[in-house]
Length: 58
Image (tube, rainbow, N blue to C red):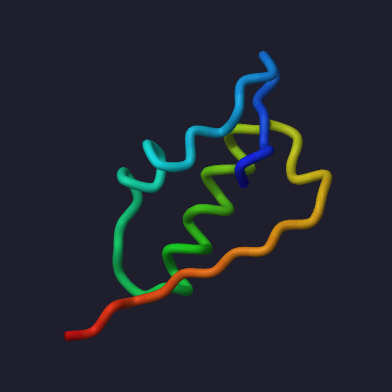
């Protein structure tokens, strides 16, 4: 995700966008993140991506 860019060649602001997504189940978070990145890029992902979400339980 760190190399995803929009049409103006701006990098995807991962930290800022991640903070706006709902934080529930890790799978759901990753699904929402992919939707957001695809919308930001506008053309879909053209390279491979590896995502990992971890939930901390106390």
